[in-house]
Length: 164
Length: 399
Image 1 (cartoon, chains in turn blue, green):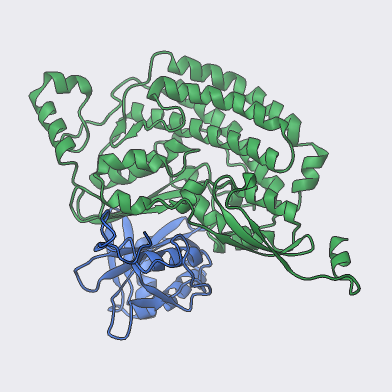
Image 2: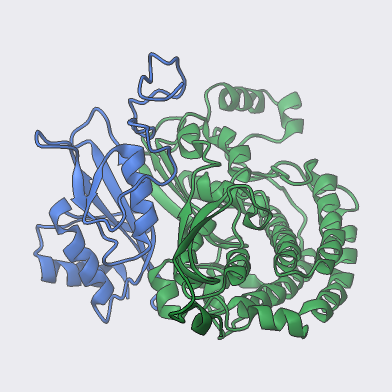
């Protein structure tokens, strides 16, 4: 199983223009349209040849002030093929609410805590998450520390939502 | 029997919720869980994290690449050298720096020493958790020897902070290799000694066999790695499947057990200590002469001696300290086999001198997620044994 075969199989299934492939330092990442993340994830896990059954981590990157603002990173692994792959999806805040994407915890259970952490750190929403509570931060915090516009240090005026 | 008792209709019974932690000796840090109990049977266990959250990833985004190294070791302070190794490997991969042979072998020595170090302390505290007081004192004896080795060559005892981008901080101290050799020569008999305390101990076996079951399919879908997945029958070790630091040149086995329980995890970790000792013996055998730091001007610090005698080296050193090293634009993920499992570092660079984003894939964080799954339906006292079999380091879980 090599990168070309994965590319071929995914293009065949989802169409050649839907996904963008990029290889850097021998690591392939795929930019997936955010509404397709669950379908692509499920296909990658269930396909008998690909078998990406192990989710290594889910993380977020804030590209403020660029748009779309957030990029979600899903690093996956196939235990039987010892093959790694990275999925990325870009989302942005809309008029109707904060940036959101479907939760992949239905596909990989590992995503549960990772998505809770990403949600509180970046202020994005994972729809359909089984347990959307905060994980590491106190419940009363309304701020999202890993956003680029959140100050590293400062006074109480800089972070009015933090309890003093 | 306990289950039958609690389900008898004439006995008043209701679900009891109790709070475990955050300060509790068996939680190895500040970990809190709300446990729902039916008599003594655990119905549900909900972990609450974050008591040790220090904003590690945010701090890293605001530090230069060289300044991140000591921070990484504060994550998993039990296997400190593994952390700085994972970070440095990621940065080196992006900088495309070639690491000299000697530095590779020194890194393997440090990584394996910290694996033994971590497993020793785990074994001691795990024994303590299930009611065996004695092992801890034996483990601390050997752990002390390793701490002395760290102190000799790196200065730090718990957190050596010895691995650098491009190699290691300085060459091995005189006498270090002889002392490692002396340690490896007697360590195998010490492991035999530990095994006489627990492996065939009927009380220990009763407390751990068939407890905390996590079958392989569950383990994979929960992202569990390291000794826990090897105790579920999967021979997956990143040192073998994706070798780094020249691990492909060492002859060692991956210990595998099929019990999926606490006892299997114990057996895997004990055998891993023997295998690490085997690697250490080979490493000091093949330790080559040569530089301990790569020559990559502008990326890696020049050797101390050159800074005093060569103009270019002084300039490069000055620029690296004042400005820092710049990584090319892009992202990279690199993982290693830490004592607890897959330890990974994902760096996004925007071409600046700080990581634009650094994501730390901490094995204990992911493995801890399996706790609720494993503890359902067991006794409350077994929950403590299961929690300790995960081998958590809370500093790494909360980051």
